Length: 264
Ligand SMILES: NC(=O)c1ccc[n+]([C@@H]2O[C@H](COP(=O)([O-])OP(=O)(O)OC[C@H]3O[C@@H](n4cnc5c(N)ncnc54)[C@H](O)[C@@H]3O)[C@@H](O)[C@H]2O)c1
Image (cartoon, rainbow, N blue to C red):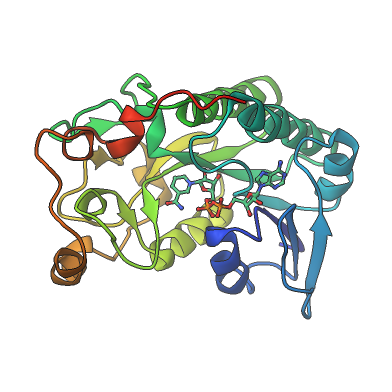
């Protein structure tokens, strides 16, 4: 690729992907509203609010791939979620439609299915059961991506990220963890694939305890290599076991299922 756009580049995953995806394109265009390090060689740093329609048009112009990590990444007030995840996503897709239809990786979330229980093993055809307004906004994002694919042919890989951190930090993450290396190889696989259509993929490592069946995405050939079990001892020595009757131990969305509505 000539130019790859990473939104949310100042965030937790964005900072890691800035380094790991450096060789995937001739130039990385990095965007956020949060502080970012100054542009290095073969980088462009652009501050842009996802809710700014004209700014998003300029941001996407000239990009041939987009890794969309930007937005509200946890439960928040509806107005904040609406600006970044609802309006912002529409602005991104309209900009992509206007500027050459670059392939998009949409960072969706396990919180679209947060109310499934941890003893259920589900595939991507299972109906959504979001656990928060945040999860509902990701359901909207998935629907928007499908509409732009079926109406205009704009391809999206919808990645339902589990928990993407350096290592698993809780018992729940023994199932949901996605390593940085496996996310990197997934992004590379998606951009190298001849065709992705609008495919939903569980963003999860090869954890023995995972809850999700990725067979819909098998055709891509992505094979995650890391396994949260390799970190079980370290995880158990730094965290307490959750009460078996708590949301954290019952639902796939864990504590998100018990959050209330945050006022504006
Ligand atoms: N990290 C995980 O385990 C995980 C799990 C599931 C889904 N995700 C999704 O992956 C993406 C990245 O996650 P993260 O952990 O790096 O989150 P993060 O909160 O660290 O980063 C998100 C970035 O988006 C930016 N942002 C927020 N509102 C914006 C706006 N209106 N305009 C422009 N930028 C805005 C923030 O400033 C932030 O830097 C998010 O979309 C999140 O929902 C992450």
